[in-house]
View 1 (cartoon, rainbow, N blue to C red):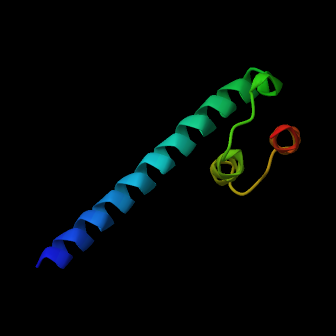
View 2 (view 1 turned 45 degrees about the vertical axis):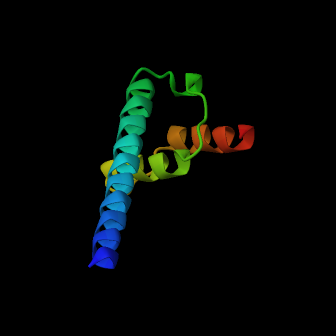
Length: 80
């Protein structure tokens, strides 16, 4: 019984961590999209995990990767 409870707690913790990460990615994608709309994407400092954010922006664009997002990500990855 204790093992089942520990497994359930571990599963809940993993789901919570996944949810937090998804929320972080969504918030960063919103931030970068707002900067993109202001033509200020170059002002965004690169962060660890921005590749996932680029993927999220691509998903929102229906699979199309805007050139300015790719160019920004290339510069960001070079700076990391």
